[in-house]
Amino acid sequence: MTESKIEAGAADEEIEFAAPARGSADELLDAGAHSDLDAMRHSAAHVMAEAVLGLFPGTKLGIGPAIQDGFYYDFDVARPVTPEDLAAIEARMAASVAADHPFVRREFAPEEGRAFFESEGQPYKVEILDDLALKAAEDGTPMPATSVYEHGSFADLCKGPHVASTGKLGPFKLLAVAGAYWRGREKRPMLQRIYGTVWETQDDLDRYLWRREEAKKRDHRRLGVQLDLFSFHDVSPGSAFWHPKGQRIWRTLEGAMRELQERRGYQEISTPIIVSERLWQQSGHWDLYRDNMFLVESENQTFSLKPMNCPESTVIYRSKLRSYRDLPLRLNEYGRLHRNERSGTLSGLTRVRQFIQDDAHVYVRPDQLADEIEAMIGEVTESYSWFGLTPRFAFATKPDKALGDPALWERAEGLIREALDRSGVAHTVKPKDGTFYAPKIDIYIDDALGREWQMATIQVDLVMLPERFDLTYIDETGQPQRPIAIHRAIYGSLERFIGILVEHFAGAFPFWMAPVQAVIVPIADRHVPPAEELATLLRSRGLRVDVDGSDNRMQNKIRLAQEQKVPYMVVLGDREIEARTASPRTRAGEQQTPEPWESFADRLAEEASERRVS
Image 1 (cartoon, rainbow, N blue to C red):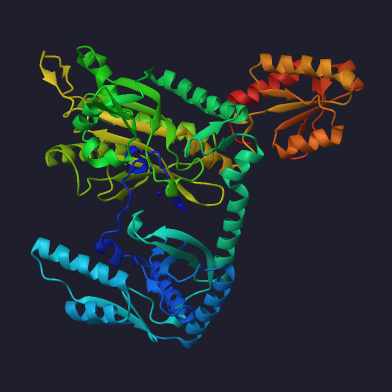
Image 2 (image 1 turned 90 degrees about the vertical axis):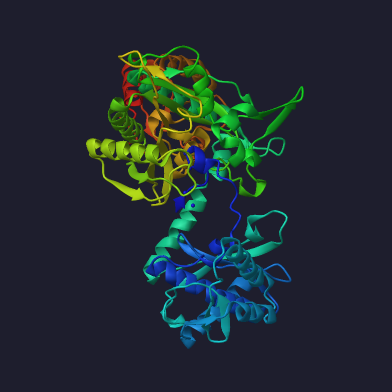
């Protein structure tokens, strides 16, 4: 559980735990365009490849798809590409655009297409064609014609489509160079991936480049260090070390969600971190995701650090006989999970190896499902409102590789449609995008920079937990029946959620969740004891307060508090202490009117309890 559409470790169990993309021949050949802007971006990738070949004769070409907000192309170049090279590549691209070469599609017989790319010295293209031929032979189908797109003297293996000519490209900019293994496999050659972007107008390009620069300023990896929230270390790659202030944010979010869950009748559980392979074989995860598990051998048995919480909840469900009166049974868990992500995919808090999810597994009767999903949609809407976020909903249906009886899938999808209709929320449909065991509702938000993030998920499971673990309840007539299991996460991974919030708020968190809500600044040493007294009063109201009793000058103390994005600063001198008043200054620089300490404490406590974004 989505990068401007962000899916780097989405809340969804399957998306976060997806097997590495292998780059099938079909996928590589179909790395083209699905909209007019995609067609322009894919065309720009071809123009960039033409320019690279011109500057670096003998370059071997990988693939060059359109992606969100831009394009890239993978190259096997004799030497590293530098920022200076990017400027030269852009200049050659501009010349090709000025020449207005038409994009022309040609078809070769399969053997002719292979011979063409072999003669051009393009082994990666030959490999794609050989894999396509092998797949066709295995399927017993004829090998399709080889589709090639040409512009000027450049030709590339491609299904298209493209814009009419190079002159139809809008304003473009090359952005960066990165390494990328061919077809995503670590034992294959490391290629150089050049990223670029192209837009229909210069204003669109300028806005995108501004967002990109602003995103760098908001990068949670930089702000996490600046604000002393967390750090990463090579003694445990992909696992955050939470500093005291970061842990305060963590516990504040956790506490807010626990309060919501208590109101909704959830019961919190905790299950072991190390679990036998037998459980994962029974659930079906072993065959699909074993490579992403951390395995542990003990006394000739194989165990795994758990990558998800759902199968373990069935052990608690089956610990006693369940009646129809026991349902819905709402079991929530803040489970510590581990997934063996490749080191090259790790990215701060948004892609990690260890994380905690605010998971829940809710077991319901069929007649309760619509009500429960409607209530869960309300939970999502309420909890996201704490951060000023507006969720969007998408219904993801049965994928091609799905477990279980098609009739059960049809039933589950029908029940979700009913629940969505009853809830009245607008939603889109994502065909074939469900997990391997359940259709689902995915939730998305846009952050302050307009980037889309995939967040929470609600999955309706009639197969993996109920069928594979033989879950039952006794109905009104005394007969055993299958419950429906709903998998749901609202924050998803708390690590990832906090990373998103750091960037969304640029580190200036809403008052209710700020790790330090107020700093008391004594002017002189004699003012430190009264400052501690005021801090104690504020802490008695549940507020998070620091006293800066350092030797720094008062203006430096205020500046440091502003750099740490503390919502309130209170300067205490003789006058304030004598009157027992506080004259708070906000991080925005607003000087508020003096008020008695008690009323100041009450006002801040009320503000914190409202969980709102000012």
